[in-house]
Amino acid sequence: MALARSRAYVIGSGPNGLTAAIVLARAGLAVTVLEAQPTIGGGTRSAELTLPGFIHDVCSAVHPMAVSSPAFAEFPLAEHGLDWIQPPVPVAHPLDNGGCVRLDSSLERTTRQLGLDGPAWHRTVEPLAARWNQLFAEVFAPLHIPAHPLLLARFGLSAAWPATTVARSLFRTREARALFAGIAAHSILPLEDFGSAAFGWILGIAAHTVGWPIPRGGSQRIAGALASYFESLGGRIVTNAAVRSLDELGDADLILCDITPRQLLSIAGARLPDTYCRSLERYRYGPGVFKIDWALSAPVPWKSADCARAGTLHLGGTLDEIAASERAVWNGAVEERPFVLLCQPSLFDRTRAPAGKHTLWAYCHVPNGSTADMTHRIEAQIERFAPGFKSLILAKHTMNTADLERHNANLIGGDIGGGSVHLPQLFLRPTYRFYRTPLKSLYLCSSSTPPGGGVHGMCGWHAARTALAEAGLLRA
Ligand SMILES: Cc1cc2nc3c(=O)[nH]c(=O)nc-3n(C[C@H](O)[C@H](O)[C@H](O)COP(=O)(O)OP(=O)(O)OC[C@H]3O[C@@H](n4cnc5c(N)ncnc54)[C@H](O)[C@@H]3O)c2cc1C
Image (cartoon, rainbow, N blue to C red; front, side, top):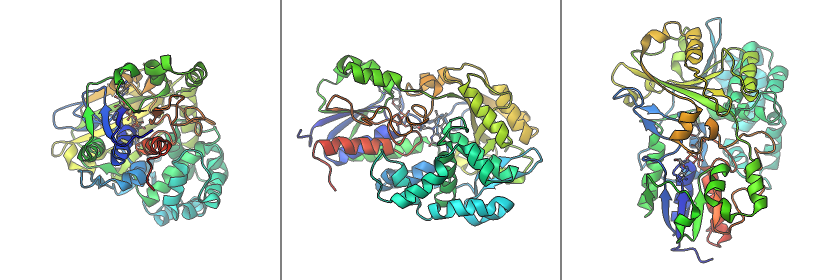
């Protein structure tokens, strides 16, 4: 197929859609991005959700994967307005004794702080951190013959296990066990599942290599920079343009879909063979989330001063508590004390709130499709480690799984990862075809393809390169 100067459409303007659009535009195609919502960005939108002057990240807030992404590194995003802020401490995990355990940007400081467990952390992390770029490129790609097999094998030896097994066998202190559980819980898997430890290691190593930064001005700036670069390449973005059927794109030579399997079935099912439709129907979505944003009159009064230096906080107490909370959502229940992921961006970015005031972002995992109101339980978890927090609330905005899906149709039942990452779906997403579909000019490029959820653009990058390679247009 001679695709140069051909017409390509990308359905959806999330980070993967915009990355795919850029790759296609750089190859010379005439690319149009069609976005259902009035604003672009998918999971990287910001808005005044509570009060005027308070800028909240509606979905993603913290971006270790974005700053590690080889795709984003190739794009001149700083020239298009993207500026990263590194909070002094990437992650703090407060405990009931009033102290807290930190995942520091410095490996040495983290090792010292972990005391008895410092050597085990250092021994596992140091060799992998030293080759972070190579490791990231191997892991954030579809199944392939590795360029660095020994490095990947070394990672696999620590990563293939359940997070609970790693925490209990490698670490002896409750601090290190809790810290690892909190990081691994980003997987949204039961922590007893094989492979859940991988998320603990990847995000842990990222803290020591690239940090857990936030974009100045909010996550919308990521989408804004990608869109601005795309438009500088001649690309076109149309908002309020929900695609309901492929028939609407009659003149397309190529279509890349930043949507999940259920939506692909809805817009293209009539053209797809039954066997592929059945595979898509078997695709599993994971738990949802319940999200809260607050406008505050002052910073959160953490018992532990170290918590005020952290961009991200993990509120859930011990390994056992966190594991119970994550297991419960897979059993269709929620714990009284859910594991809470929290970010306090305005402490480090004064553009987020009026002078002296603050924004706060948090969510917890809930069963897929749950409409349970978790406000009280999330706020109780914050009060547990920061008594007096509730008296600072000026306004709040909550989103249950249905609200999230209304905000972004990709958040099926509130699933923020584009599908669960249990084995083997972690690797075979959404089917063994990865980005390809049985239709020659139709590809998937969302987080339902490898390497999965998070703001990194690598799904879009690999999908667009696959499409270009199959059209003979991929330049070395
Ligand atoms: C509450 C929450 C917190 C998160 N926190 C983080 C975080 O801190 N760090 C991180 O890295 N990741 C985080 N994520 C995950 C991250 O946002 C996603 O993994 C990422 O945005 C996926 O990108 P995507 O391009 O695949 O899809 P999306 O970003 O979901 O974009 C899909 C786009 O397609 C559009 N669309 C859907 N259907 C159609 C249609 N038929 N026609 C036209 N357009 C359509 C949608 O409106 C949307 O704009 C979070 C997500 C949520 C919801």
